Image (cartoon, rainbow, N blue to C red; front, side, top):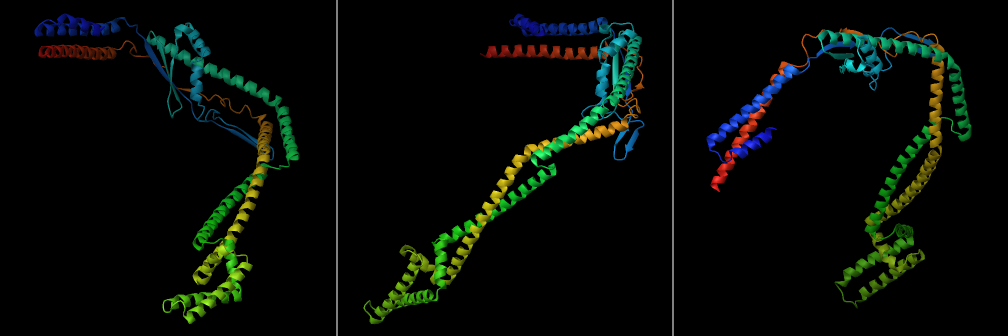
Length: 462
């Protein structure tokens, strides 16, 4: 509405001088402020008066308790603490729902001679970290608000008494009637465990857990062994690349080097090869001494070649075989390659054996998983049935030990008060509303005036 009024003023003052335009904006702002304060006055004059009576309930801690223990049978106890004391369910929340329930509100409304719709719904607040319940009840007069609040508290306490008596009666009647069913459940649980043991061979869940522990240990050992096998395999491949021969050829080379005849022939061949290289630079190719040395070199080489061929070395592998045998350092590498290959093969066989063990354990666990879960459930059922039966034996004569077992006692911390002032209408609310409305109206008219002036200046420049 204010925006439409400002729009009409803009259209009407677009062609007027600056002073006249300002006066019209001022009149519009004054009218808006008058409207705002008129509404505030109407709120104070015509708003029906209502009063709020406030009270508070408190839930004390646990009272006395009774505990009975029977050797080799079971134990039962009755304490004043509420079963709703867990974090997931608070008695304050339960009591709030009872306070807001139709039976309680209807009883309170009947007590003050009202209908449920006229009585209205109270405002219930729960205090965090404290067992306090705050209640607020509205009324057209202060006396009526207090009277309604007192009636609500009385109806709430009466409802709690009804619920407690009903619980005790039901519990007392059910305990003795269910003793036979408890015993039958216990016997049935024992029989189900026995049947499962005979059918599957699984004695207990601990046996299944032991299999799982063995599987975990076998997997860990398999991982460690596989890592060691990979390390040995990598070392073997590195030595193979360095020496240029396979572990099989290296083993053949070491076997040949252990032969004294082959070793002597190889040494002669190496020495003669060195002499040929030495004398080739000093003498010509037809020098008798050089020819003689080359003949001996050829004979030694033929001897080495012949023995290598008998050992299964091909002509292509002969040159790769001779090079490391001539050098003592590389001969050590040959030994390392052969021993590493043997160790790698051993580790691989160990990996295969461990893998078979892991697979067997894994398959066994898979076969027993459902049965183990079933056994666990049956064990739990048996424990529950045994505990329930043992507890029921001792609970027969102690189930009336505490009247406030399920519904804790609720004490009136602060009786419903007599309101001294109405909750509605409030003079403070009217003043704050008027001030805020005045500020908003003034700001709106001021911005509209400034915008109109700015637009006209731009139009003149254009």
